[in-house]
Length: 110
Length: 112
Image 1: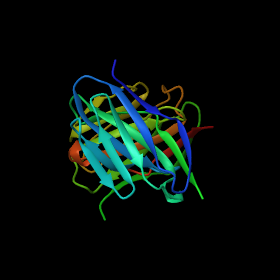
Image 2: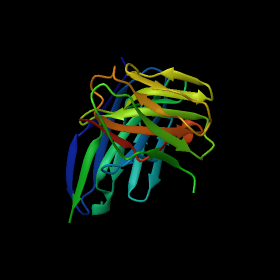
Image 3: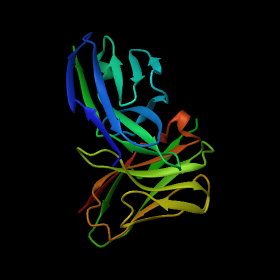
Image 4: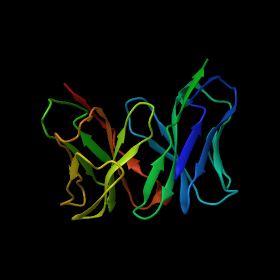
């Protein structure tokens, strides 16, 4: 059965304290690994798509990496405005469908 | 600016009622999707449509119905057959997954 698991469920960091979020997957026929940011009461915002093991993408303080079994979202020197829930999703089958993990709720404190 | 508009933002349903959630996009995207989000669970796919006048069931389609009469519009009806409809509903569209989905701002449905 295709599965996407995110860890930790919640993470509290001090401003400037770098860390990583994990997304592990067991799927057949992966068609991309996606990261989204979701603020409370809003729709998710697209961050990155990764397709191949070894691929990396960066955006400001965020860097996403991909291996054959997992992806990491590295947050370097986070700021309070980085506080949000980060969702991981995998593309499966036809129809551009995505299967989502349950997310990591990140809180960055001053 | 292009985007996806979901309305209403909040919706209250009485037991036994059908309600319809609106989703409109002006991005010229072919594919549109409806997801449901519950606390502690990932987004779950209800229905999706890749072209006008065609749509497919997702993982949790029971108790829901959709239509796709126009490229821009993909309304979702939550019927009385859906026993636990209280949730946050998200509509999305895409040109192709390389660009990711664009999501609307969601509709929070509550049964009263």
